[in-house]
Length: 239
Image 1 (spheres, rainbow, N blue to C red):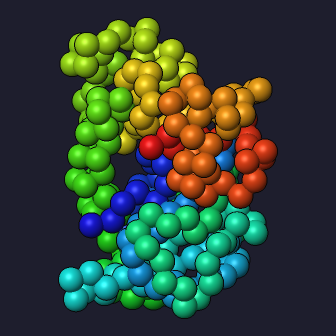
Image 2 (cartoon, one colour):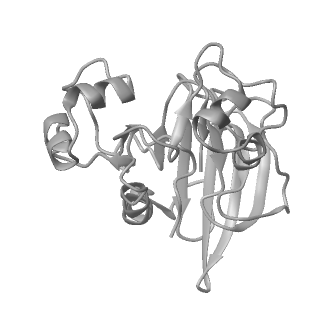
């Protein structure tokens, strides 16, 4: 139903309705990460909140049913849409940040079955609506990437995909081979599919040549405003 609102799958805080009351999930990673609309809809709010920080809410009508999604703690000045804007699924709406009541860069993402309200009584666990569709998506990228599931290990993944643990460690910059987590996306092999993390000295033209694509395509699919301003650690899509 909903696509993941960013390229990162590292969940640092899950949905909880006990005393700690966390009505969404926190998706965290360092570097530059674009935030995308999880489904087509109309922006209901685009504002700066004391708690949510830079925040956007989107109202969706899916098969006649009302839903509302929340994207909080975005980078200051990164909101790309205003209230009333109609957005398409996957459209860039901002950048992951650390504004409001936030500790460390992350996206706080909520899904409400109905309208958002101050008591968050309509909040549901986003993972219930993200997992199935995105597991299929990640696992079907020409064998280039793999979405880690509960119970997986690097040795099992390597054996299942005809590669080695050392290759997985090298491609993914893994520091501890025993620390992988469900929802993590691993690159299985080099290729022109998937994504690329920018290193010192990289240029868009060099990345395009190395991955058999064009600068224009990289600019278009990554919503890059200035081709001469890319950042070390920034992850860009190649397809």
